[in-house]
Length: 290
Ligand code: UTP
Image (tube, rainbow, N blue to C red; front, side, top):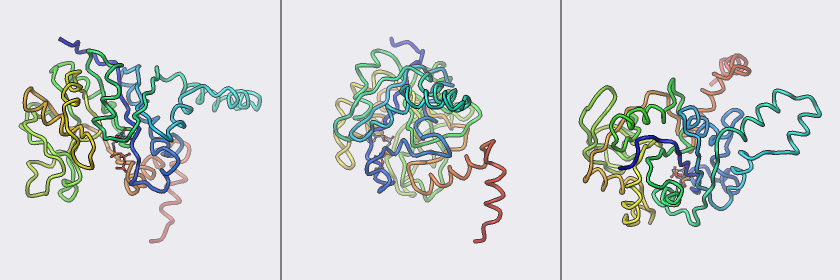
């Protein structure tokens, strides 16, 4: 029996980011800045504030900037020290001390399921969290922490879900589910990108998961699906058929920052909430004529 204590998070960041080309041609999508922090830092901070200290980042070709971002930068630190920029120095040092980082390379972008499989040897017989760095969730309680709480109670996989607009249903994995508690559902099936007519609900699986180690053997047997990629949704569907699975309607404001429009919306909302820039930014926005 695997323990119910979740201490590790996988952050898959090896995708090609085609929705954000040409920006992502030579730089990782996960390093796009939302106001003043790269997207992946939001994911790491979410994990850390939910008590996850071991962060496994799945990287690939052209993703070195991610490792550099979370590493110590002696030259920069010296420069900030000499120029008396104490506040910035503290912030820069904090980033490299956030968590224990480990990087695994996915040699070919063969899908999210394959990316997760790359971390199998680092997870062992423990449950783990998956956080997709291009989805930023502004929440009163860290989104992944909301899922962990239920996992520790139930011991079944817990998927984060969000209620999407009817026109968005066909872009997501949608669950078929029965109510099981406050914001909680028992998953009976998952359907990848259904038409609105086929969709059993408007509850879309988002980039937050707590998974048991048993998912690895399912992923190993999962055949490539859409775009010849190993789809995590396909493996979850198999798992849901043989053992109980739950979904939690995450409480928070979710942004799909891997999409250009989603990224712009997130920038506006985080800009308005920024303590140093918010007021000036709001005045600027009010003054724009459409
Ligand atoms: P996405 O489909 O959102 O990301 O995958 P993508 O493939 O990078 O972007 P588009 O769709 O082409 O614009 C969800 C997450 O899974 C990771 C991505 O980095 C992203 O965080 N991923 C995806 C991998 O790590 N490896 C893969 O082979 C595919």
